[in-house]
Length: 355
Image 1 (cartoon, helix red, strand yellow):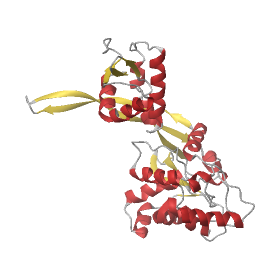
Image 2 (cartoon, one colour):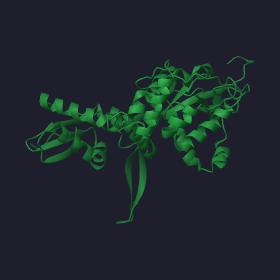
Image 3 (spheres, one colour):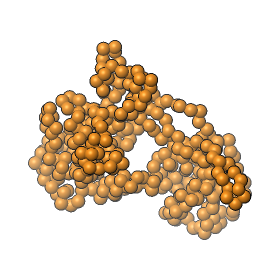
Image 4 (cartoon, helix red, strand yellow):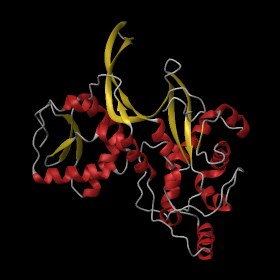
């Protein structure tokens, strides 16, 4: 930023904009626990999700525009906060009344040609009579459908203090995609998705209710120049956008993945490789990518006459898979059509597998 150029917050401070990204890696930490049985203290290893910070320059944040994605409804947006009826008639089903109200509060601050704002969420929560957690829940919904996108902010002029985030705001209302209008039955819902995201995904699977769908078709028929896109994956768009940022590594990380690379994995035959490929493909559609990368990417398996053994890189991963993902793995094996009596769990460090 030049000496005389003001930042997005209207002053000349040196601001750094960033996003927090889950790396899919778990970091080991030791924790001392009091053992009530013998009144001694024991140390156990726990693993916590690791995050990277993706940093963006002032010019990159200014260039980023949500309005470049999707087909927008043709209308002029001036100094007033304007909402096309299309937003209420059709987007309201996905954003809900709270999401619409929140979008209104954000857009009113992105006046004129501005497509960003840094609102006071405490004030907005009072105006909407909603708790702060509820407000952040609907911020997730707005981001999912490309109506807002958050950049965290650090002020280096003021000793690196973290300030309120900047939000890029969509100024024009986009048309629904065909996937949102008619539904996407092939859309999978990750088991570990947040409840409000699961609810949104269930709606996306079904599409608009029949009556709204018919009303939407009337709208399209009255506007011949409108072209509806098949689908827009904002999650993928945001991932691509991260490539423009600089990933900042804040610590020396020892990950489960790195640990597993030094362990010996027993080779699989061709049928086992096909089975593993199917299981991984099935699971990857049911859980989030960070969870899949953390727990399943390094997994292998061995098939005995009556048992399937899921082989993990270490003891912690083995226990986690058995406790959290047993049913999902069982479901995948059943879909493949293989006959088995038991699902067992082991690590790469061991050599004896049930036959």
